Length: 502
Image (cartoon, rainbow, N blue to C red; front, side, top):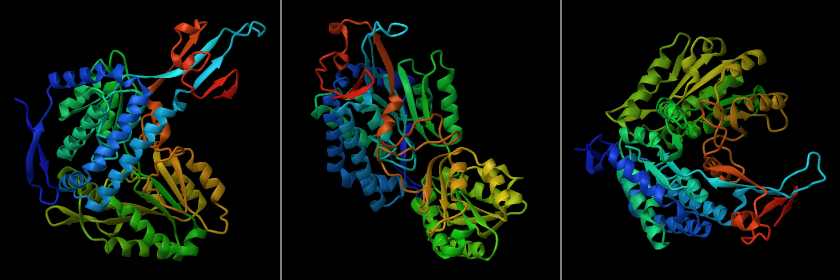
């Protein structure tokens, strides 16, 4: 008999109610096959665009109930969760427009040219959906990175049906969201198999190994993501695994910036570190501050703001225990000082913390270069450009890198921006990395361990993860897919003989 899946209140640690049961291998197989069977219906770009728009409407109709249930399961607060539903609906509608427009197909036609050396055949290239996509929901975004989140929306826009492995932190929210998607499918004439939901640790492992699963998207820990990544690679036929695993998101404060606005930087940095209770994947976790009086003022401002931050509940007891263990381990390192100790507040909440070390000391402690999920950051005091460069040499791949520069020009600017490109996917200047805009130009990814591929999981180009190119050579027009036929019956944008052609 399958184990029950419980909804748990992180504010009390108490079980709220059994939601469903963990999926067996038979359940996973049934879900994947149902998704696989919906591929033909989902191949119509107009139909899936309608579905994505209707899905957004269904979530908006059920907004109040979704917010209430999600808050009870995550303690993230009604205001934050309502905003996240808005973001999720925006993503769904944006990908509906992308599906309808067809630019993502990247159609290229090169007509035959017998005069070329060597002679060139007729070649026509476009992109097709990979097939069933496994999506692993995130703990910290119960909507935007979960059942109806960006991975799901982009996969559906590409024409890929989805099987979502629900996160155990919000099973009831996941069920309600999946029900909204099922209603949207029914309203738009698509089979319910286009989006399936399974629960349980073993179900997640079964899912990535299923022979009909063609790709996977994951947001979570390095340990869990790496296990799934390795399983995807170890299959008889390996599949793409697009995982967002962990990121320390370094920040560099230049001497000129500290002299100009030390207190303001410290206060705003604290707000970024504690946003969402420090449970954002782009939380600044490593801050390089110059030694000297200006840097001292900045650190003092940061410490005051963190000390004044009210204790808060994290997403679950496991995350809380890992946070407390990680904070204690870092505070116990030789040369480390905790002007604001992170710690427990009662049985369920935690206090934000600050740790400081010298640039020399950090060279002996690799753990300081790893993400500690929760409201804590590490300040590294550097005394020279050489010390700063030495720390940056050791920074692992990150989703973001931030630099605070003097407003009216900064001698370090060019060098720092060049260095940051080497290890970060998004470079932020005189702002903070928390808050990821969902736009066409966004890139949410980075060198490993930030992610396992070079693609983004946020923004319009996230759709590229679920596609592969196919070229047709010297194929009679009647046998070509409609997208590649000479008359362009679908009126799709494409490049013809090296030029854009509508």
